[in-house]
Length: 133
Image 1 (tube, rainbow, N blue to C red):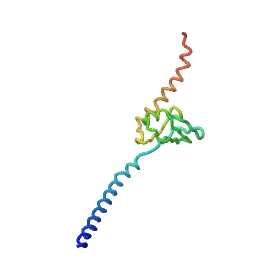
Image 2 (image 1 turned 120 degrees about the horizontal axis):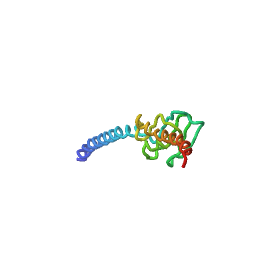
Image 3 (image 1 turned 90 degrees about the vertical axis):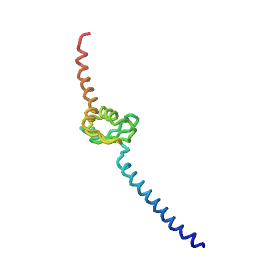
Image 4 (image 1 turned 135 degrees about the vertical axis):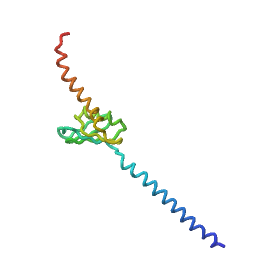
């Protein structure tokens, strides 16, 4: 009688172990690509190199730049917003990648647009000062 009770237990245990193994394998397969695809940092390539290694705090995050490469931990700010701030601080951005992915050409143009309007204001300022009041 005891053998009749013990016999179904190994079969049930085997089915349970196989079900648990399958669940864990499927969970691992669905979670791993998502983790690999996300970045936890911003990565920037500048159009022109900075003069020596530089560090600057932008939006509460420490940015480190050397040559044409800059990087900082992601802080959750929108990519286009932080890209514009980096461009104003370090110069024209040629490539910007963050947790949401890489900015396309149109977004990079918008990122660098602040530089164009800033340089236009600087050039316009002396001519406006010469106007009579």
